[in-house]
Structure formats: C-alpha cells, structure tokens
Length: 432
Image 1 (spheres, rainbow, N blue to C red):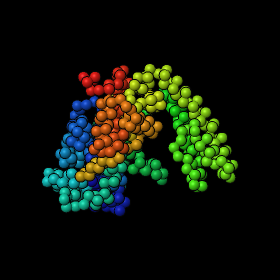
Image 2: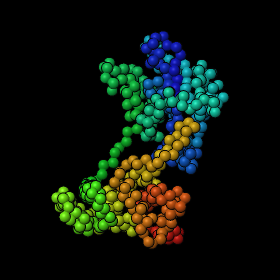
Image 3: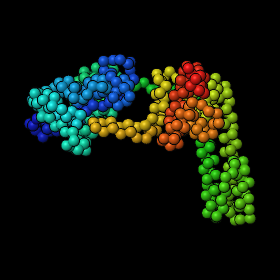
Image 4: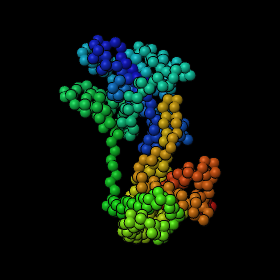
C-alpha cells in the first residue's frame, strides 16, 4: 500500500506530525503451524503455505494498523479492514484524528472497490493506476513502509498484530519522550515497542562447546591454507617479473622448482627466505589436518555423512559444527537457505525480481558445500542420481549454476541423513 496524509492540520507542526502514510503488503512464508486462518497457498512460490502482511504507517514509518491474511488473498480485499483498524491519533491540540485525509497505495489497489471504500470514509484516494503511472514515482512514499516491514519480518502468529500496533502507538502517545535524544524520538520508541509486542525478537541458538571447538579447529586450518596460498602466489609473482614461469607443480616439489629457476641469480637472496618461511605453515597445517581427520573418525555422524560422494572429513565436520543440532530445522530444505544458497527475491507491487544467491549465514559451510559439489560433478567417477541431476542442470544453465544447485541439494541431503539416521542412496530405485 502507500501512505495517508491527514486533512489540513491547524499548524505546520501538526501537519508534519499527522500526515499519515498508509503502508503496503509484505509477503513472506511464515514458519508457524500450517493451516492457520492467516495462511494460504502462495501464488508466487509454487503454492506453498504463506502469509501476507498488510500495514499502514504514517510519514515517519510509525505503524498504525497491521493485519495478516493468507498469501492467496488479493491486496484490494483487505484495504477496508486495514483502514478501519487505524486507531485515533493524538494531535498537538484538539480531539484525536480518527481517519487520514489521504491514502497513497500502489497499483495492487487500483480497483473501483478500493476507491469507493475510501470515498465513503471521506479519505482521498491516491492510488497508482496500472499501465498509466510509473512505478518509480511511488518510491517517494513507499520507502517508509518498506522500512517498517523490515523491522517486523518475524511476525508471530500468536500475537494479534492490529492490537499490538494499537498498544504500541497508544503507549507512544501517552508517554512522549522529553529528551532530544534521537533514540528516544516518537518514531524509534514506537517502532521498538511494536517490534517487541509483535514477537519480532527471537531466541538465538547457542552452539555447544564441542561445535565451537570444532569450528575453531576448522577456522585455524583454513587460515593456514590461505596463508600458504598467499606465499605461493607471492613467490610466483616475484619470478614473473623476471620472466620466470613456475608452471603447474605440486606442493612438495614447489621449493625444488623455485631453486631450479633462481639458481645463480641475484633473486635467490630474496626468494630463499620466503621458501624457508613457507615450511613452518605447512607443518602446522598438516598437524591441524590430522586433528580434523581424527575428529571425523571418532564421530559416527561424520562417518555416515562421508558416504555421500564429494563429502570429505572437512565438509562433514564443517556441516556438523555449523548446524550443531539437526532439530533446529523443521524441514531439510531450509538448510540451504540458512547457508545462503538460495536466490534472492524481491517482490513489491508489480515488481518481481530473482537475483543471485543471498550468501547469508555461515561462509565456511557455504564454501565447503560448493567445493563438495565441484568434486561430485567433476572428479567423482561413480554415477549417482544426484550427479545426473546436477549434470542435467549444467547442460541447460551452465556448470557454475549447477554447482550451486548441487551444493544446496547436498545441504538438504546431509541434514536429512543426520536427522533420520539413514544412508546415502546412490539411485532412485534404492529409495523406492
């Protein structure tokens, strides 16, 4: 939706304070119990059960009314309910204002029913028309609504949203802040109270001590691997300036190849100290890698996960330390989104854009899944249904997208194996 400035106030200060901004609908899939009164099949997400948020805010992003409906309910069907839920607004002087003077909304509300409903309530409709007005012009008003929706994304179904928004606004109007602190302004105070009342603050999962120890071990090993890569790249860059190319060599034969190239040159005094400094990180990295191997051998879950093609001890330990408890996720599909392996999606009004993967969550786990997918698609010789699925994606969308898709699928498979205690199925016949 859009915004709603009030009718002409009696003073400039009252005009700025009581210019109402009617908010829009945010669409998200809720994670509560399925089949509630505020859920419905999402037409933009393959019919999954989802919930829409319909909100009205003033010009300062303070929520005035909020209601929940199913994802299949059109925005125009809820406009009257949300407008009637706006509580009386306290003014600088005089009686409380019971309705806005204007209502700004996007093209989703461009319907005769919405305009008639606003006219009956003596509210001037400012609704963008489909195919006539540009969507960019409404951005001057809609950003305040998007800011409010961003703060209440985690809305709980058990909380009555309209009542909570009313209580937050009334508490703000009864106890206005007296200090000139921005954090105690009416805007921030009302938003903080609304976020708490609407259940947007969630409990944070605290990982176990074992998971934290494993994560420290993996992080230290990755740090040494990165430093060794930087040293090798630096030595290659120094030699390239003199026209010397190292070529493809193994890690153990790298020093002998470098000494062969710089023999008898003045560059030897510079490169030899780097080769000597390179030996210590290799020894420590090998020691940490042995600790990773030992930890994977002791853990029954890691041994089972390592039966998946492409998944080694590092990937298995990284996944176990990142998830910590498989019961945290009610569905295995949510694990890929938790690690940032699902595409971004922006939906607002007539806009529907799908972007690259979000790259949210644990970076170390996401990199481990991508490396495992790369090994599965390029180096694993044994055929499996997962590899066939990934190669079919590579034919029509490219190898890079196929690796991301397989990485997301690996996260789902590993979580299901851990939660159910099952083994990896190489073919679909084994599942049947």
